[in-house]
Length: 209
Image (cartoon, rainbow, N blue to C red; front, side):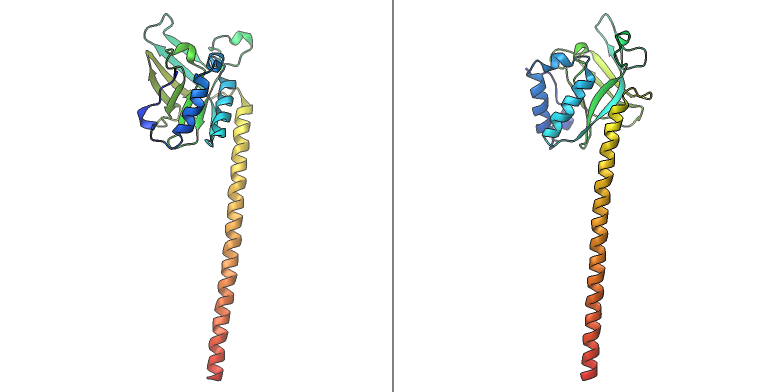
């Protein structure tokens, strides 16, 4: 049984088939059960599986506020500094999700299944970027999940990895610019030689005309 729902607004995306394959693999195995509350490993796994299907993504550190209508504990704070559950057990008080490099970008979170309905344990939603400090608020079952920017970073390794990706991207852009510059220089030289030869031919015709 699928344990996620694809919103109608993103079903037309060309990458959705690959994303569904990844989510089906997670949903149809016992992996999902082990990802509950284990956002770091889960996000890393999802990112690698997406890459296998040629879908690039980033891991994003954030904090999540969950409001539930029909639960004993109505409000949950996930990833907030000094408020996350089990922080006394040396666990990091942060939360990590995957954001795809697609149009629109999609947020994927497979670590909140313990607070979501059994048939909707993987969050997959388009990123809402109107407010940079709150990049998503989604209604799933009786829960409203709000994702907020993490201002006090707890996992510099994630951001270091993203920095390396940016450096690689910058290197690729530099290579492309260098190639274009060489191509323009070649075309300029070719045009100059062609112009010189044409002038020489005209001059020869005038002399021997």
